[in-house]
Image 1 (cartoon, rainbow, N blue to C red):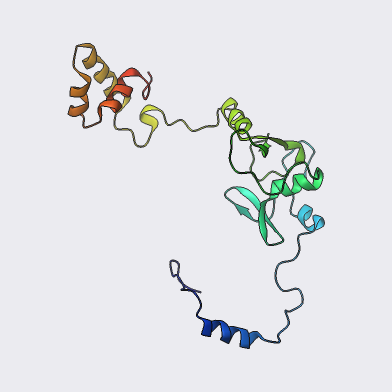
Image 2 (cartoon, rainbow, N blue to C red):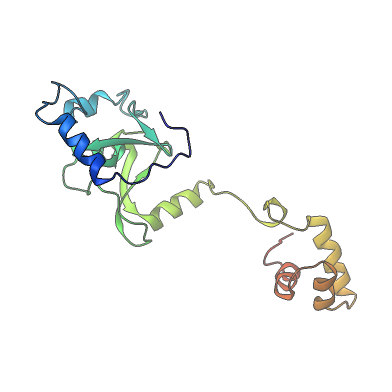
Length: 194
């Protein structure tokens, strides 16, 4: 197996010919390759529990979401299971992210590997954002919580006091090596509240 980071160049025509001659006339072994994902196989990869409980996907997971391959294409497992339960309500392929596009499947339970159709609802990306915000599940990177923040809240309060004494914004910005607009947003409370 090649080492990580090794990039094989494109196959030459001579190499393709050698592979073709070496495999010519061979039949694929019975059962070789991926099995077709039938509804029975797909449901077998779902840990069906109580009606109100999450039904975790037991198959492959990628980026926290269950994934399944059908006819050589990858799909989200929860979309496939939802489609088996409610045919033709959504497309198997997830829609592109657009705030107003419907066809997204939202997890009411906030569990990405859950495939319980009772925990899934069709909506838009905007619905998903509103759901996230209503449950206070978004990351807070305001003020000094931002890893790229240059100032602590204490320093910001000191800068605001200096501004009240008449110090110019441009002088504060130059002294602390930030842009004028950055200092102005900081002092006005747009980037630091408190």
